[in-house]
Length: 83
Image (tube, rainbow, N blue to C red; front, side, top):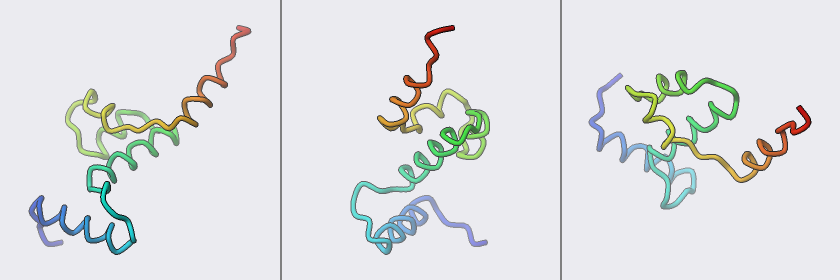
């Protein structure tokens, strides 16, 4: 595989978003954030996400996660208050 400089890679990713019909607001970072959030939602550990998105420290993972309002409501609804 050919090495791509960071700016070339970003341009390539942006061209893929445009080709898919997605406008502004999408970047390689938003793709990483979506990937990380979906991994956590599927039950993977933060340590696994840390390795897969290339962060050297686990405390750098949390800012990459997006939690939807639906996920927040489901988490609250799942709390068993009768225990």
